[in-house]
Image (cartoon, rainbow, N blue to C red; front, side, top):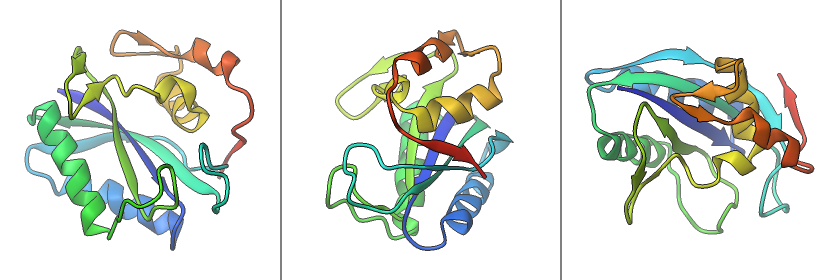
Length: 156
């Protein structure tokens, strides 16, 4: 199954954090990174009193189930020293399961598609780079860009 993972960081060496997180997915058994978007610098969303973020999206292919991919994401974050304190606050690494091929999930611990991906320019722009037609796994997403105000983003 294919998945889209959103990556973000605004603590430490942001470029290195993203590169090493992408590399970590290639170390997961039965999983490989298929494609990676460019790196983008973005302004924070939700909690403004923090440094800008570096964001990207990757497409992976894995034999793992969505809940297992969520566990992989949480494990990689923990390996980077992620500590959850302030909602939408500074973080060394944030990995979000955005989309899962042909899956819609709504459980207590996992919602796919990610419930706010269509409100985040820092997800939609890298996603559009990977899927230029504005559709991924049956989800049309490009039209949401028109409704987003602010959220400055620049390709690095």
